[in-house]
Length: 201
Image (cartoon, rainbow, N blue to C red):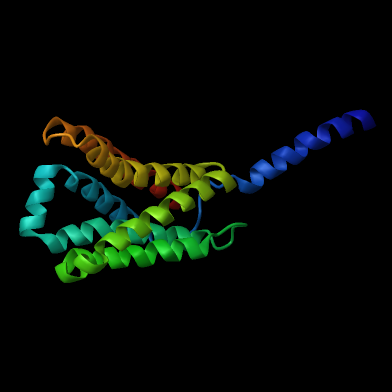
C-alpha cells in the first residue's frame, strides 16, 4: 500500500496543479445584460471589418464605428480584470494597459488630429500588449480562460500583424486579397468575443 501511495503522489500532485489553474468561469460582478451587450457589440465590430461596411461607417458614422470598435472590448476586458482579481496570476497591470490603450484608440477614432500624432504608437502598443497577455493566459491557465489567451493572441495576429506584413511584403492588388484577409478577421473577432463571453456568463 505504501508503494502505491508513493506512486500515486506525483499523479495526485499533477491533478491538483491542473485543477488549481483550470478556470472556466470568473465572476466580474457585472450584470449579464452588460456582458451580452458587449458581446453583440463585438459581433458588429467584426462585421464592420468588411470593406464596404467599413468605408460606409468611416464616411457617414465615424462615431458609431468608434463605439462599436471600443465598447465591447472595454466591457469584456474590465470584466475579466475584475473577475481575475482572486486568481493566482490576475495580470492586473496588463489589463490596465489594454484598457488604457483602447480608450486612446477610441479618442483617435473621433479626433483625426489625435490619430495623426498618436494613432500609430497606439496601434503598435496594442500589438505589444495583446500578444504577451494572450501568451501569459495560455501558459498559466487551463480551461476556458486559456482559450481566451489563445484567441487573444490569434486576434491580434490575424487582425493586425498579418495584414500589415501581407501588404508590406507581398504588395498585392486590391480585390480578392482583401476578401482573403477580411474573412479570417471577421471570424477571429467573433470567436474571441464568444470565448470571453463563455468565461464571464
